[in-house]
Length: 175
Image (cartoon, rainbow, N blue to C red; front, side, top):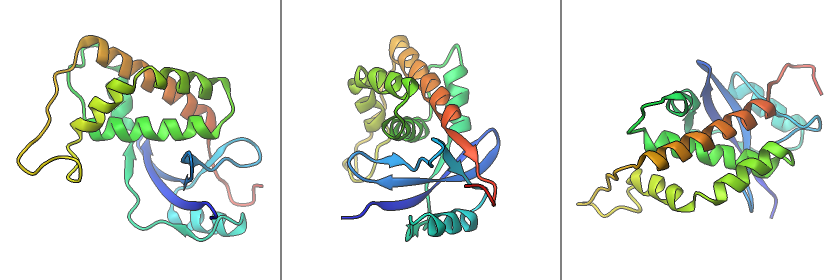
């Protein structure tokens, strides 16, 4: 079965952009021949790029916005005791997809650190109270230890370093 490609929307440094994400085993982010994930200011350029590079058809219907600015603010807070679990989970998953797509030391560092945090990841996931996973009359509102918050923040910092090393704005006429 061929890989399925999707437009992935994210906000970083106040700008909304798109990149190409794929569903596979494992999921990942499209990396070009130069070793970067091209990013696009709009879905029109993303669709054209995908067509030219044989990644079509690409689905861009209602992409979930990954608010990386929110996750980055949390990663830098020295006194954080609560956080937006869905946004942290989306950033964590996106960084994991980058780590699986890139054969770099930062990718390996993220993957190794991520593997040590499975119970914390599960707690963040459960805290999102997704309708398909949470009974109607129940919600999960955990208490976070300082150690858990510290480990999540450290993981996000590694994830942001990986993300910054891998993305580049696409300019028409390149590649």
